Length: 312
Image (cartoon, rainbow, N blue to C red; front, side, top):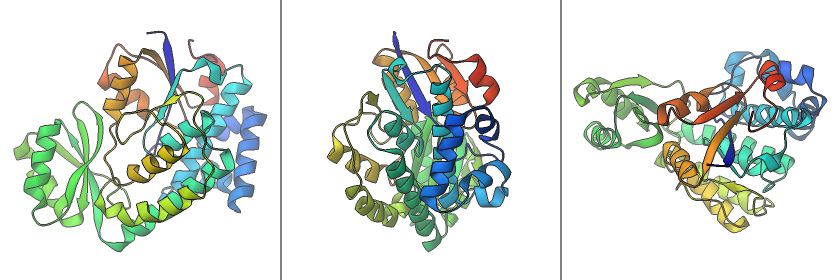
């Protein structure tokens, strides 16, 4: 277990104020925010640092905000002595997969930022087309989650969307089906928590977003990554540019297999993980997947100052 992996969070990791202390402490981080503002044509840094929360939580803002903040923390980490060569593997939860591909050299920052901005817009647009949502099932295994989807779904779409960790599976579907699932969860032996999201991400409701994203992906320059980057959709490693495009398009409508990704990395010799980005979501999930896993979280200037290397 000599390998190390850097991992990046996805939607839900945002909070007003994220990245402010990092930008104050690091010139490299400030440069990332400044570049992002230029690429996007609006002040994303101000929204990250000062909100308002309702703006930051919009899917089309949230996705580039989390991506940019994660890259800013990554660059600050490097400025403080960290290096990409410390890692043999990389990964990210949903949106975080784009960050992982960027730091692995598979896609340039400007291109990745335009992609996640457009991805957020397309997913927001797809969510507006039909009322849909997501529900977190606490205490359910895969078999129980699939059975609940079948029974509560009826004639509506209701499918597993995120396999995050043991006892935490997120399902997604029509509003009516999600409401039925919440009402039926107790009899299925689990607890249901409706999520405050725009729509049914990682489900067939996102087919229009996947179609639109494919066109953008086809125009984006990708290269084979310099380290092994694991894909959410199948827990396999990204390959060449064409394969990356296909995988990222699939990811929008397919369930996120995060638990399986972590287990695959462990099987392949990763003994140490570093979560870089806002919040501590992945660090928390890691403890539930395997308490023996060593995982360092770097999300603040204070954490950055104390944890420079991947093996610290």
